Length: 459
Image 1: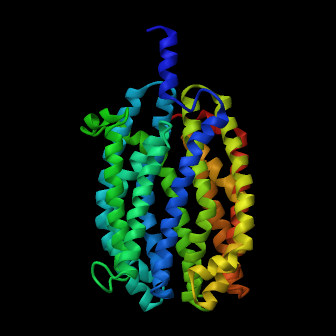
Image 2: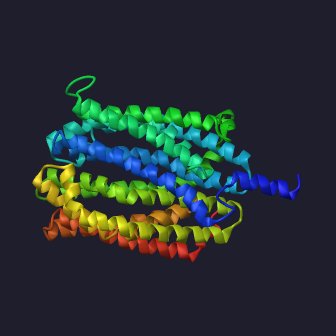
Image 3: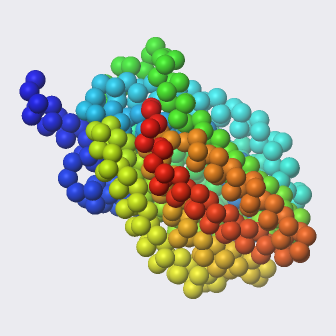
């Protein structure tokens, strides 16, 4: 096979390596932005519909979903490792390696998802009381979590397949999958809670069931798309399991998992601090609402983070080192500009947003403070999140893990406890601690990316 033929095959297999870098950023970013915004809409609808049942229901859904996210990040760690390995293989023009890596990662993810369903069902009974003293919130949270955790199995399929499509430079298929999930989930929320269909009085059971059923539909669409892609041969390599391939994935994914678990653990500690503030139920509800509203702002950053991971991975696979480095900073600058605009809207319209999501005056007051204070940190959040995505695409997950742990456990949590409880600032002190830690994390992440040591990482 002559050199021109090899080059043509590489270009076809690695669409993010050749041509304009800005074009590569565009073709990956816009579908992923719509995908993540759609995901945010689903989360916001869940909280809004729960609000129709009262602040206790909102707090219960917010708390239960944090516990659920703890299990989801274990599954997503497989996707992080898969993105790095598959994108590099595609960049190098080695589709056979990409296919085998996809197969083994899918098998690992499914096994993990099935296991976590049973673990989550058991955990639902004893985890929630640790983070809330409200009998109503705990009771509702247990019911919600025991149902919603069923989505972990289909989620394990969807998350892995979507990560694989992003790695090969296809961001439109994950968008299709998310649109299906969103449509079913939102329709289910309103039909069960507002429409009292198919059984009256389902309440938060209906919200949870809608999420699980929607995830199942999404996984079926994802499997269909994979079967009709250029990675369709992966189904032939699901068995036997390869210890070597799985260890490659986990070597990259485990630090990412620990980073996210650290963040979730820090969130639980914030819940404990919020529970000891005045008006604890309203404090927890305001955090749940604030996170959902803020997600409309930072979810586009998730899209940029996933986009740059694929571009960096393919560029490194193709030995385009300068392109990988430029991609990180180009997307970061794009994120900063976007966040300046969106954060301004979040600050200005904090009260209208809060009043749409709740009718409780104290919850609204706390939520307004949350949105306005955190709006100040959004440009810095873009630096931390986008560069973390670039580093993940390179397979560098260890240093970002330590940066995240330091920012959360050495800055955010001690400062939150000091301001909220010792200085009696309540939720206001926690919001300021969150903003401070985001700024520090962004500075550390920028320093590490600029150092270039991540270019030496092997996957």
